[in-house]
Length: 362
Image (cartoon, rainbow, N blue to C red; front, top):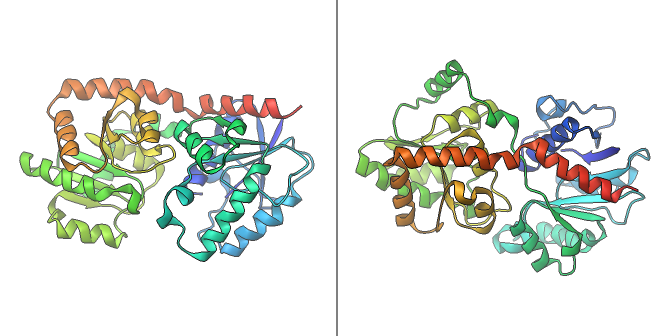
């Protein structure tokens, strides 16, 4: 079976596309790319062997979704669009669309510009034309049902996957080099990986970590990718957390795996997600997870971590303290987390996609 997947490397959609292509390759489904004529997809290479495009003009995206996709190669059995988009009319082959979340529909602050509203109005009109939809969590399926009445019958829930790098131990010398480079020297070490927009709710974690470190008189909160986020620099300064906070630049996947494995807790305070990739990666890497008890993240973490109300600083303080004060609990969480993370191995996830594709291609 030949599947065509629209490609875009390093946004969440790109991470997903890379992992899916890798997983499909491992289970014997061949994939060809669209959008870069003559560029071969290399499943075992970072970013699928494609050169990263740092800037994409909005009109290029518009052209591709409205016109470019209509030139889909004739020798494929199915087209998979790995984010919420669809061309103006049905195509000659089945089209699968992945719905990661309904942020633009669920959260009004994320579509305040006219161009954004027009784009998502277009998505609302076109999405029903897809042959099948994939929701990456039951929570996202519920969102689809809320905002696209009647489409739930087209939806298959398949979780997001975790790259194999996060399941593998990082070499000691690589770990030491990274810790020296980032000047990470304090314990306990609490790690956050994710975005810094409003729904990520990182300020609650910073306040909770401040109280935990004050009680313990030491520790550091590592905020990955926050170095160039002015609002985070300002927040850390306003709370007097400079001594206990490390704001890093963006890091490579291997460095990220090392940071997970070098931390005592991974914390994830988001108020809305379609899945929760950070917690899934942390489970695979073997670090105890404390996360928000919102639906999508609860699905990912299950009983392998501690779930708390996202806005309650005191619940966060209590949960963080509980893990830090009990090595036995920490070890139990690590063991449960690793077992839970196996459900998100890309080979296992790809088999579910392969089954879906098989139902659609006759």
